[in-house]
Length: 195
Ligand SMILES: CC(C)(COP(=O)(O)OP(=O)(O)OC[C@H]1O[C@@H](n2cnc3c(N)ncnc32)[C@H](O)[C@@H]1OP(=O)(O)O)[C@@H](O)C(=O)NCCC(=O)NCCS
Image (cartoon, rainbow, N blue to C red; front, top):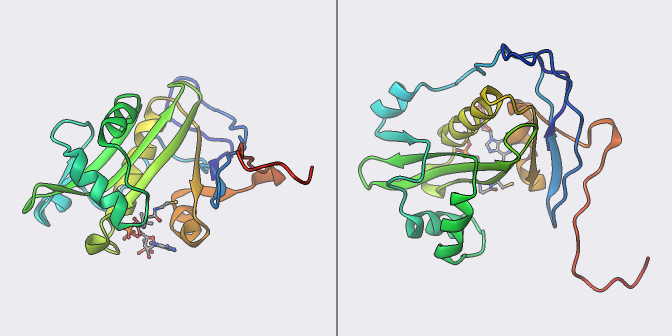
């Protein structure tokens, strides 16, 4: 998905015109995030204070993030278990990340991160919510904050890969699939039989 409409923010570079960028992924639909003209502070559906009052702490860095616990959340939602050292490296190379800790267990229950060039483009990865905590607004909470952080940095071309069943989660956040007919492509290591 991509955010790709003209975007107006309160940033010095505004108004900005977003160019849709194709995304690619196996199984997934590439979604282009088309941010409608929005103020740089995107609406936040649940405040940090409100999250705190419900026993959740918001974090924006890897500090205190237990990667084994994060890996378990990935596995719980069906992602393959990955080498924790590689996750560590990937997160160190990540530009922005947001995660929510459940105060009672000190474990991560919601997570999202973005990589990119720090100026024009960002790709969002690993959007997950622990199945025991889904459906109570935590996914939206991390996504809203991640998008706001990217926009604050002046990054307006924001893309992600979406499982077809999750398109409805991303759309209200401003993402659209295949804007202007642009399609994503993924490099495939499968044997190329039919060209
Ligand atoms: C997709 C996921 C991140 C959503 O997180 P969540 O915390 O359960 O979602 P929220 O409670 O924040 O829901 C926010 C809104 O999106 C809607 N929504 C959530 N999942 C949805 C889905 N799969 N399809 C359509 N709408 C969805 C909710 O109804 C809610 O709507 P509302 O704002 O009108 O009340 C979470 O279900 C998850 O981790 N799924 C498994 C991993 C996954 O598929 N990640 C995405 C990879 S592409």
